[in-house]
Structure formats: C-alpha cells, structure tokens
Length: 262
Image 1 (cartoon, helix red, strand yellow):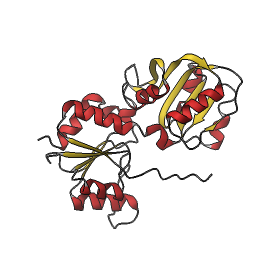
Image 2 (tube, helix red, strand yellow):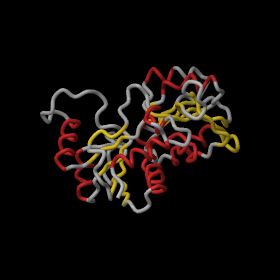
Image 3 (cartoon, helix red, strand yellow):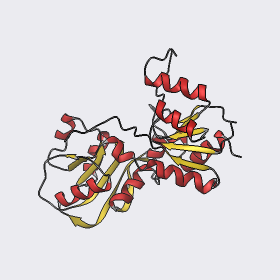
C-alpha cells in the first residue's frame, strides 16, 4: 500500500515542488510521510468541513490545491479557521498534501486544463520561468476560428459554469489569441498584451487593474474558484495513472466562499 510520500512523489514527477512560487507552501503540510493511504479526498481547499468529509469517507489523505497554511503559525489556540482546520486534521489523523503553484506552473497543469475547456490550439507558456519553456505562469494559444467578443464571453461563462463574468469594455473586434491563468492572474496582464493576446481570462482582478487593459485587450474574470475548479480532475488523473487501486473521492463540500445575489 502506498504512503503519503509516495503520493507526494507522483506530483514531484509531474510538477516538481521546486517550481512553486516563493510565497507558496506546496507539499505535505500535515501527516507523517510514512502513513499508508487507501483513500484520498480531492479538494480545491482544506477546511474543517473537508476534514470531516475525509473522515466520513475513510480517506487518510486530502490532496488540495490551496495550502491551508501559507505562512508561519506561532500559536495553536483555535483562533481562526486555519488553526481550527490544522488542529482537527491532526486530531483526526488526516494528512494534507497541497499541490498549488507548482501545478499552476506545469506545462500540462492547471492552465492546460483551462485551455482544454475553451479549445485553445498552439499553446505555450505565457511567462516562462527563467530559461525554461516547459515551466512558468499562464498559457497562451489560439481559437480554431475567430469569435465575436460577446460570443466568446458566453462561451467562457458556459465553460466555467460562472454565475457572472466581469469584463472590460468591448473593443468591437473578433478575437482569436487568448491568454489564461487560473486563480489570481492580474500580474500577467502585460505579458498577455505584449504577446498579442486579444483576450485574457483570469480571476481576482481589482477595480483599478481593469483600467490597465487600456483598450488593448479584453479582460474576462469568471472568478478565482471558477478558473481552478477543474484542478481536482487533474489530481485524479495524475494519481490514478500510478495507483489505480486507491479510492479517489471528489469533495462534495462547496468551498467557494463567494456567493452571488441576482
């Protein structure tokens, strides 16, 4: 039976943890690497509800996209959801493995899945990491045929099952070259413009950042959760190819903290 370290090693081969961003905390956050695992819960986030779900579904390990701990913790007194989640995981003997920006930066990672959803061809990394062209942030590619802007917005809304898409002013042109970045990707806007993208899909754009489009590109913001929701499916594919007999469960807990009123 594989253990926690064996599962971490699978992701190390697919998307080395050394390629994560400096601010990140991907890797085995909670649990003894030698703990054997027969069931894994796949989730975008780790919360108290997800810990309880893992226990109910007899999963010894949670593989999540977002790390429950990003920065050092000096106290464990149950203050805040992060501390409570960590304490519960330890108490219930549930491991947590986070696979975050290293999977974002992998050529066949999160942004490749997004590109699949909107049908991009001729893909390449938007902002390579150093001299590497197989690792880096974002992705850029082309649609098979140019589309009207509103048609593409509708296509994007459907692809991400978004309740709403925030976007910049239409430019009155057909678009073909698209850049994408799962999660928070406003830092790549200028790279998308410089490489000729006519539209850029990412989440968490702030009010003033929409001005930075400056009539040069159409920004589409379906939401942070919405652009990363397919990550759990990628988790399943990566793990099942190596360990087909492990029980893999998708979390049924809705961890998106944002609600919409219509």
